[in-house]
Every structure is written in C-alpha cells, then in structure tokens.
Length: 391
Ligand SMILES: [Mg+2]
Image (cartoon, rainbow, N blue to C red; front, side):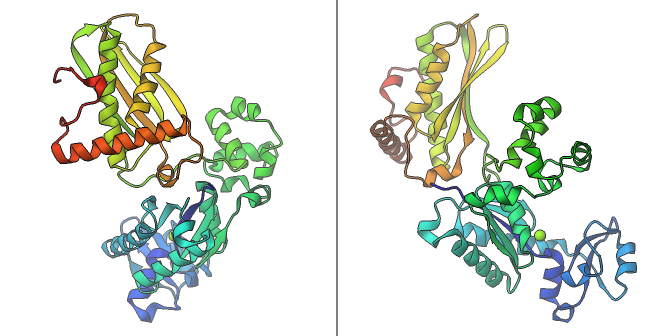
C-alpha cells in the first residue's frame, strides 16, 4: 500500500484570526506583534507585500509598513482555534501529529477507501477546516514522506494544495535548494555551498559513504533527504515511543526456563497495552542486568510491525538464546518500539511470519484481551505461564 502523508499549514494563522474576528481588518495589512520581545509573530499577506515577515523586530515592520494595523497577540484565542483545527483533522484520521500551533501532519495511508484519492481528501480537509473555523484557509501538501509533505504545503500558499506523487519526487528534488531540506541550517549550507553543492541534485553527485565520512549523521540525513527518504512516522501527541516491562528478581539467576517465563509475562503485558492503544512496533528489545549491575540490550527489527504477544515473546526468547549469560541475572525486561501507526489500518499485505499463524495469534490475543476486560487480568493465563507464582 502506498504511503501518503499530508502536511496541513494554516495561512498567516494569527493575522488571519484577527481578520476573521474583526471584519474591519480584512484586506488590510495586519501585523501581530509579540508583546514581550517586540518581534512580529505573524503578518497578513497584505503586510507581507511590504516586506514584513515573522521574527522581524516590530520597529522595523512599522517603518516598512506605516499604514499597517499593529495588534497584540491573543494567545488564548489562537490556541482555541488551533484546537478546533486539530479536532477537524482528527475526524479524518487518528494519526495526526500537531507540529506547532498552526500546522500538523496527518498520515493518510489507507484513507482512500474512506475519502477517495489523496487530492480529494486534501480538498475535503481544506473545506472542513474552513467551515469549522468560520472561514480560515490552510494549505495542504501531500507526499510519500513527512519532509516532502511539509515542503509541498508551501508550494501554492496561501489556500494552496499540492500533491507530490512518488514518480514526481526525483524531478521535484533535483533543483531544490539544499537549505529547503530539514537539517540544513545556515552553517551547513555554507559548508555545502563551498563544495559547490547547492541543490538536492548536487548532493547525489557524491556517494553515501562520502557524506557519512565528511559530516557523520548529518551527512547521512542529507543524503537520504536528497533522494526523498524520510522514515519518520507521524506521531500523535502523547503517544508513547515505546512500550516495555521489566522485573528485578529477589535472587539473581541463570535459570533460562525461569527467564523465559518472565519474558512471557512481559510480552503479555506489553502486547496487551499495544493492542489497547492500537499500536504495533517493529523493534523488539531484550534488556538484561547482571548481578554486578552491568546492563546490556539486544534488539531485533522485524520485517513488519507486530503487537502479537507470542511474536514479541518468541523474538525476545531468540535474543535471550543468543546471549551468553556471563553472570547471574538480576533483571530482565523487554520492550517494543519503532511504532508504525499506519500498519494498524493495513490488512497485512506481506506477513513476516506464515500468514495463517499470525492470524491465529491475532485471534487468540483478541479473545484473551476480551476475557481479561470482562473478568480481570488474572482470569486467563497462557499455557506457558501456567503454574507461575504470583509476582
Ligand atoms: Mg502557518
């Protein structure tokens, strides 16, 4: 299934709200000044024509645009409208990540079935935002990855709509100035410029290894962005980045069967929590603390995300099996991370495990979840845990 991410950006947000609330300001250059620091917080498009832009000192804005209407910001009101906008977005997808008070990412993967093709979805979002706010416009960009969606929302601003399809990404990126790529600040840009690298296309003239050697992590990110790669998922606010469980034992132990039973309990707890939150993750991490308090972790990344208790358990056990226990163990834990929110909407296109097996696991998990919801967490115990003492 194709990945689609929308970036929704309100147009001149604070200034537009002032114009919305006071019709006398419509069509006039409005500058919202940040009271304390004396810098422009937002400028209406009419004011931008005079060269006024945000973060500029208010004193300079007054000189550039003497006939401008200067107003102090009303933070509470802007927050109220922001909440309205985020709520509208939440009606389209549970996978909405507010990036600031006036912009958000929305994972639109798989929403075609509900709202039609992505351009139709984008139009509906714009219309819904306009209606809910009483007339505010936003610009929407849609692309296969986050950073391209953000750049796309800026293309036809204001009241814009720009869809960047996967087969257009290479042509779109080639002439794009490097400073438009996330992670390229002024200093990095100057260093690149000294090398004659001015566009994303220029970046690709050098091999990946060159960028890694020369600039480390920043170089790797630059190379990835220049070829349109960005694995960052849309992360709704308050969403945990990982889910984990661990126990410290009363007595240190080398008993692998005992450790496995503990892992089963942890996998059960973590799996249940993931399923309750509609999350699944690709990376399973085993954590072991030895008697001397030295701690080690081992991880495995699965080809597809999971929240099945048995899959989590088996992966953790494989990691434990591969581990030479140098000392008795005082703590064992496991965690699941690398959440893939969209995966929850997908009908398992390619299974990392035999498909029937994974389906059976899902059915078992949901049956157990339902029983526990009704009769309490200790009502049902898997065979592997049977005979365990209470912890
Ligand atoms: Mg904006």
